[in-house]
Amino acid sequence: MVNAENFNAKWSPRMSNMASIIRELGLLRSVRSVTYYFTLGYPHIDGEYIVPDSDLVYHADNITNNINTFVAAVRDAMPRIRNVRAYNYRPVISIPSVEQVATQVLESVTKIIDRRPDHLSLAHIGFTDELVASPVTELLQSILLSDYQGRELETVLIQRNASTLEKLHIETASLSACLKLVWDYSQPSELVVFTSLKHMIIKWAHGQRNPNERHPTATPFPRLETLVCRGFLPFIAPAILTDFQTHLRHLDVEADQRLLDIYNQDEIFTKGSFKTLGYVSLRWGYYFNSNTGYTCTPLAYKSAGLSDCMHTLCLRDMRLKNISLLVSEVQFPQTLRNLDMANTMLSIDDAMAILIMCPQVLKANLSLTDVSLNLEADTLTTEEIVKYQDRYRDNAARIKYLGLKSWKCKSVQVAAEFALLLVDVVPSITRVCIAPNLLSTQVKLLEDINAARKRSAFASHLRLDSVQFCIDDCW
Image (cartoon, rainbow, N blue to C red; front, side):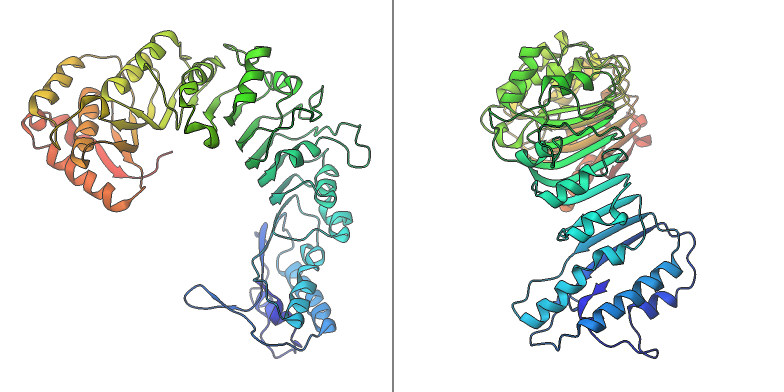
């Protein structure tokens, strides 16, 4: 905890301070990672911070001396640090002297980082010329930024590590900012190639696509293995996407209409076109899903056939029509072991059609609905349960682990009966994980599963006693 108010005081040898606390820990040879939280004030028992509400006497020399003392203490106690995280959680206070103290401490982040780490995470840290030019921010293997908007200093920081960077993680960024990453800031016509980058994660890319935006004609990511992007995928140039076919192993992106048009025109997402892809998650983007869900079905077709060595397929948050047709026309790869269809609502018949067509799948995460049944009562009749049991008495499904992410049923009791029915007709299931969304509802679901177990349609099925039902997010 890098408390600006504490650093402003004059530290004496007998005074307890940030440095003395660290020295009392002794030598910590095994510590490889350190996180600095830049704060102002002191945490209260209720989680809020008690912050100065009046002028402080600003002592710049005290802050400089104390930071040097603090850095020396960290260096002596933890000589093998390779991973540094710096987060700015201080509140903004409109008291000039207080802001002066906080600003000086925060601008000393380069000194506090001290040694050259391999991995650097910065959240809400203001970029300075000193930080970007410092030896402590070069030869980095990973960078995590909370917000990237394409400003000069943050772009230069990333690009100066283009040859060593293996992982780039950005929480939020604009589309235009992401594209700036691949063009040399000092020579905008020159492509920056990230020769070592294996993992790129953009949690949220926002903005509008510019049809006049310049895209590379060669790939800037020749070794990328993991691509995760929510919102808009910035890198849609055919040259980049085609290059991914030879080395990408993990693809998790949201699609929009422009992206799909490119896929269709250039035949990039064709059956088996990605030779090394093991994990596939293509979903219709959040902004588009509400009124254009019909496009999810062709998207599911593309996802299922992308790779012949796929082990995990995620078809989450999709509106799928005519699942029986989808199942009959799509050939799921024999290597598929995990199928995640969370929040893609399936009837019992839909779920069974998919599981039967994928006997190679060992783990499935599903969401169930009874909408197609038009139930009048808050429970299934014994005749309805027996009808399903007879229909699926002998089937090819072989999953062992079933996840129940959500349900859209007339009652919790119906959802419980559906869950128990699936376990009953698929005897290979040994464990059912109910996602902990709303705990009180999940507990009620477990209670109703136990109650349904006593119904005559299930009472003599002793195998059900060996199945473990739990509240856990197995995905």
